[in-house]
Amino acid sequence: MKTSELKRGWTTGACATAATKAAYAALLGNEFPDPVSIVLPKGETPAFPLALEERGDGWARAGIVKDAGDDPDVTHGALIVVTVRRGAAGSGVTFRAGPGVGTVTRAGLPIAPGEPAINPVPRRMISEVIAELAAAHGEAGDVEVEISVPDGEALARKTWNPRLGIVGGLSILGTTGIVHPFSCSAWIASIHQGIDVARAAGLAHVAGATGSTSEAAVKALYKLPDEALLDMGDFVGGMLKYLRAHPVPRVTVAGGFGKLTKMAQGAMDLHSGRSQVDFDWLAARMRELAGDVDLDAQVRGANTAVEVEALARGRGVDLAGEVARLAREAGVRVLRGAEVALDVVVVSRDGEVIGRAG
Image (cartoon, rainbow, N blue to C red; front, top):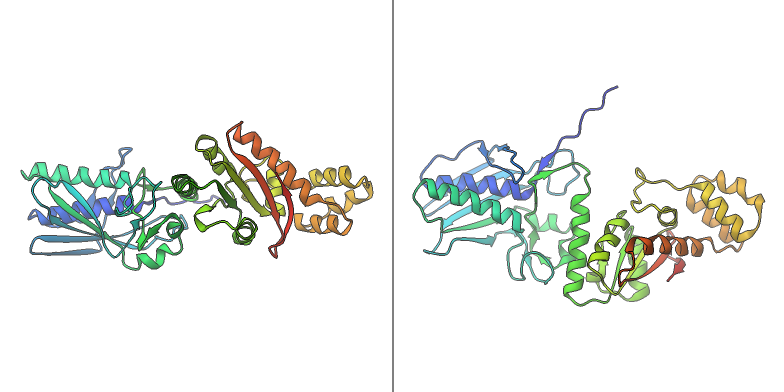
């Protein structure tokens, strides 16, 4: 049976650029182009149908529904609305956050505090389409661009924006204009932003957790502020590689026994589809710790890693501590001598710390 290829989609930045082009064309006295085509950074030329067309005295507005393709993006189906107005002579292109678009409040992001959360590449793309249309109409290109997203503030609560200090709504994002389904690039980019914010705030200790239970445990254990908590998820390698080049004095990796067993085995992507727990490996660790070969069959026949950890605890064997130690060794190898002190915390499903190293 042939599996159909996953459909790619478009970033909020690409949608905002296309909406800007349509709205500015209307402000200059033309009809709204529908569909409206733009050129993306790598040369692609997608066309976007308009979902909203409005204009009045000195302003024009266009809206595009974001299509994220087959990616599980919280902004899929959101309406990206751009209103353009003529700006003061010599002002160039200026940006405003309308309802549902956030404002940056902390240092460390690519946009300065106080600015609308519209990232550099979308700003450049928008400025380029304005310059192109302005030149064709003999205009100076002094334009105010306001981007809004209905329900954007509610959607933003499902993203990392509140933790990054972006308040009031979503960010307008994108570097290529294209959303590749399940590419993980957006998630890893958010980890990088979290580290940048922590560094700019002068934090000496950050923590990355595989899930909400381990995050709550490590936050309580070290009394960490929210801005020190990185949304690492399965991407421990992506986090540690970025810390290697952008060090923070101390980092803690926290996670469940199964996830950190995979890290201890050397995996740096802990997703179930990309790495697996090796029960033969766990059996060997149990044998080293307990000296009991009779446990081999039970460990190898276990359904889950958590079942193995429970067996170890029942025998008084600190298997979680050994997994933490070996996971830390694997992480130190990724850091390659960077000035980052690494420790690892293993957390049970009910939030108990059951293993630590470092």
